[in-house]
Image 1 (cartoon, rainbow, N blue to C red):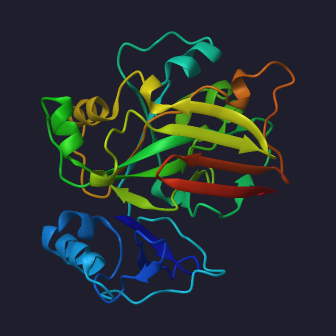
Image 2: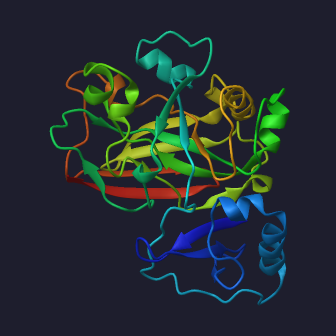
Amino acid sequence: MKLLRVGTAGAERPALLDGDGTLRDLSGIVPDIDSALLADEDAFARVRAAAAAPGGLPPLDAEGLRAGPPLTRIGKIVCIGLNYHDHATETGARIPDEPILFFKAPDTVVGPEDTVLVPRGSVKTDWEAELAVVIGRTARYLETAEEGLAHVAGYAVAHDVSEREFQIERGGTWDKGKNCETFNPLGPWLVTADEIADPQALPLRLWVNGELKQDGTTADQIFPVGEVVRYLSRFMTLYPGDVINTGTPAGVAMGQPEPKPYLRAGDVVELEIEGLGRQRQELKDA
């Protein structure tokens, strides 16, 4: 299933995109797409049954209708740094022996076509197309990567916007360059795990002002999805509705020759992952 939330910011309703591309209203079945839904097998079964029944869900007019983040009330966003071989190479970093972790606050999440704000004082705002993993079952001390995959509810497109000066040159942790307002566009859809045969075979692409910048594949991940979930479960409990941003392929501004083409107000970023949808953001000054 392709689940999404549509409407004005703060007043989104749950919806579903059916196999024919028709937007369907889920608000009569569930109140929202959130951790409570992901953790409730009965509620999830009702959504599946309604989606399968002919005429079971009323259509919505998608014309001019905003897509919000496909998941709300996110518990935590755990991010994996330097998780693609080609990205580590372009930045001159050593391949990590274990996943590099940092966090983004849930309040950085916006819709897939919402405005991204360039922070005040920023000179190095960068782009990062990423596969987001949404947890569907509580995960503690998992033993295998297969168990890790079994705890995934679905996948989405994430844009891990980053301010490199804040992240790298200002001391402390990476978090200060990752948590600026609007720095995690998510969606348009939450695609349930049963629709993704292999999360390590997904092409990712990103364009800036129409120019292709990133053209990678999750096959290049150093730590694949199942292993990432297993690894994280050894250090923290993962709950339904938690999100993992799994890293970005080569092609970020930081990896380009001088002068590096960092983002500015007026730039337009578009990104997509095959089967998970497409995003578009215009940048403005904060």
